[in-house]
Each structure stands twice: as structure tokens, then as C-alpha cells.
Amino acid sequence: MRFMKRLFISAICVLLVTSLAFAEETVPSRIKEVTLFSGQALIQREAFATIDKGVHELFLEVEAFRIDRDSVSAKVFGSGEIFSVQFKEIHVKESPRENIKILEQKIEKLKQTRRTLTDEKDVLNKKDLFLRSLITFSQTQVPQDVKTSFPKIEDLEKTLTFLASQLQAINTRKQHLDSKIDDIDKEIKVLERELGSLHEPEKKTKKFIAVLFKSLREQKIKIEATYVTRRAQWAPLYRVSVPLTLREVDLAMFSKIQQKTGEHWKNVALTISNVIPLQGVELPSPDTWTLDIQRQRARRLKSFGRDAMEKAAPAMSVQETKEEADFEQVPEEEATVAYAQREELPLSFEYKIPQMLDIESRNKETILPLFGRKLQGEFFYYAVPGKSLLTFLVCQARADKELLSGPLNVYFGDRFIGKTFLSEKKPGQDFNLNLGADREVKVKREKIKDNVKETFFGQLERDTIIREMAFKITLENLKDKPVKLKVMDTLPVSRTDKVKVKDITINPAPAEKNYQDREGVLLWECQLKPEEKKEITIEFVVTYPKNLPVQGL
Image 1 (cartoon, rainbow, N blue to C red):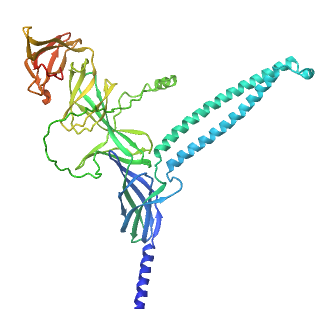
Image 2: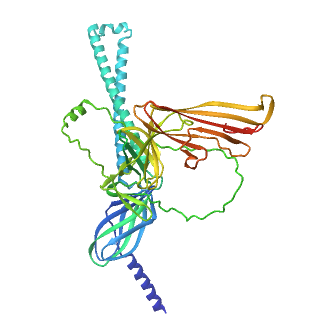
């Protein structure tokens, strides 16, 4: 029995020693591919190593701030077996990230330079104080007992001139130092802001992907490790360019990329994906359909920030003008844009960028072209005089592929005229592009009648008020060419049987009533010749109880 017990303990020890007897090695790796989603990125690292036969634990260091542990996986290309793939962290005193170290070193060097300049300025201040004290002394009443030894007037004037020139030199140097100190302070603030965007509030750690691999022979292997990291995103940005001929529309989609993952993406293959990553998403289930009386609710106004940055070109200097003259023989052929390759997936689509990219981890945006299309569009003028006094030139185009929602910059004849927002469009769906207001096509709406009858023949009071209303819309084309105009207006719609809208007269009749299934919305489509003017009149009668105030009139 005692022999069996010793044998069992010996076997356990052998197993423990065997399990721990493997080589540990940190393998250099680089980021090879990045798939960027709307709020995260899938990183693929690649590493090569030469190993002996046996069990090895291979460490691939990563510098990302936040890694989804469950997303970590690895492949080994070589003869052998993978025992495990794990994500490990080791706490350290200093930041292990090279980019943070570089910024910290730059800031410290600038602070040292600032201290040197400040010390020099202190010395100049002392010299300034000493020289001023001499001047002050020379201007005071000299005691009688030192008059005999005091310098001559000529020598004193030379001394004062010398002191004044020294003071001027000191002040000039101090101003130069102040300017350099201000520049250093500004540079330090910029670097500190950038450093703040890179620092994480978490403890400083080194992160590794550990691959436990049993090699069947001495060989050279390749490791591919993937993981998901946060603080990386992309959003669509559109540019639409309309030629002055109004024949077609050039629509280009760009990806606006920002990544502050903690890792620099150097010479990587980038793929932009519109897939929605699953983050605790459950399948929907229907709720019970209930009916109830509508309660009053506070109205909420929605505001959408739709800013798209437009950078103004700097003024051309004389040197730039000379350089431009040196390139008069440059070909007039315009270079094409290198767009991405679109790939359909079961759940989404992806854009593969054709060139290798460097994208730093910092507070900076990178804009890359994804695709460009020439769309055939219908151009017309659009007005809603009840809402706006302006008339807009509009191009109605049709999406030939799915368009995500995003800011849209509009160029007319290669000139930037404004920005708007493009909501998501499916293939085949129409959308309108606002090309700006045109003052030469005028639409005016005015009330021409508003009569209220509260009595019969001016004597007997009514229980019901009769209100006769009429509006006139005037259309005018001041251009020297014909235009197509779409005008929209509305009729009042009653939501209760106590208020009635009747005796409706519209001249001319609208092309469409209840436009786009919106009750009471009217649409006219008009062709206006040069200098032509047309009128639209709308008349109706509203009746409602005298003691019942009506909203909307």
C-alpha cells in the first residue's frame, strides 16, 4: 500500500514537471490586416518563429488599450498541435507603449528647454535691475564729499549711453525669450492633449496573446492571431458634384476613420465593413397590441448635428506662383480616384481598400474614398411657400446600391455650396439632393380672404362660426430659360367631427392630392417660360362651434 502511494505521488510529480517543462518565448509580430466596423476593429497579427521539437508557449505582444478577451484566437502554420490560446496581462510600472513613451519624452524635453530659457530670462532680469539701479544712482544728488571723485560729464554721458544700449539689448532678448517660451507652452499643451487621448485610466499592463504549441520537429512556423479592439470607428461621408449642364450627378462615398486603440496600424490591409457586431443582441419578439386613448405629451425637438469639415486652401505665395509657372507643361488629363473593392457578404458588405495604409492611434481623422457613381437625375425647382420664402434647385436621383446615412457635401460646378445629410437609402430608392436656393425663381404665398361670420344677416347670433379663407400662391420665373417647378401646400384637415372643412376650391387643380400619403398635402408641377408668372388660388370654409377654440387656424 505504501509502495502504491509513493508510486502515485511520483507519477503526479512527473506529470507536473512535464506540464511545466516547455519553452517560453516572446515572438515579434506585426499587424497585417484590419477589418474596421462602426465601433470596433478586428485586428490580425502575423508572426514568424523558428522553434525546436517540443512544447512551446509563444507570446505575441499587443498594445491595444481594450481587447475583447473572448475574441482572441490564433492559428499556427506548422507541423504540430495547438494546446491553448489565451489572453494574458502583466502589470508594469511604466507604460509599455512606444507611442506614449515618445510623447512623454518630447514633453519632458520641451519642459527642460523651457526651464533653460526661464533661467536665462531670470539672469537678464537681474542685469536689467542692476543697470537701472546705476542709472537711478547717477540721476540723484551726489553728496559733496564725493563730488571731487565723480566722473566728468562727458564720461557720465558715455556711461549712460552704454547703459541704455545694454538695457535695449536685454529687453530685445527678453522679448525673444518670451516668444519662445509661449511657443513651447503651446506645443506642450498640444502634446499633452494628444497624450491624454492615448492614456487609459486603467492600470499599466503589458498584454500578450499566449499560444501553447507542441512542435513535432524543429521548424519555422507562422502564427496568425486575431482579436477585437475598441476605440476604432468609421462613418460614411458623401460628396455630390453637379455639373453646370445639369445632366448627371457625381456621387462619391468616403469613409471617415478615427482610431485611438493604442496601436499604430502600419502598412496594413484595411477593410471597411458595415456589419453590425453582436453585443448582447437578442432576437426580437412581438408585444401585445393594445389600444388606448391618446394622452398629451410634451413635444420634443430633435436636433441633428451634421457637421462636415471643409478646409479652406491657404493663400498662394509668390514662391508658389513661381513654382506653378515652372509646371506649365503639366498634362491636362485629370487623375482618377482609387476606389475600394466592394464585396458582398451574407449579412452585409465590405470595402477592401486597394493600397496598404498607415493609420496612427491618435486624435486624428483619416478620410478614404470607397466608391464613386454617375447618377442620372431629374432637375427641378422646389418650393413650399407656407414654410419658406426660398425656392430650391433639387436633383432627384435613384440609388443603385445601398447608401448608409451620413453627412453630404454639395458641390455645384466644382464649387462647394453647402452641406446636408443623406438618410439611408436602399437600391432603387429615390432621394432628393438640395443644390441650394435660387433667387431668380420666386414663389410667394399670401392670404387674400379671412371672413368670420358669427350672426345671421348681422343680427341673429349663430351657435356655429363660419370662417371663409382664401390664399394665393404666385409663381414667377425671372430666368431667360424655362424651368420646371414643384410647389407644395396644404389644406386644413379636421381631426374631429365638430370642426368641418368644406366648399374647397383649388385653381388650377393640383397634380396630386394627399401627396406621398400625407393627408391634406397638395402638389403642383408647373412649367414656367422665361419671365412667365402664374397663380394658384386655394379657397375653403371652416365651421366650428362658437364656444370651442380651434387650434391651427
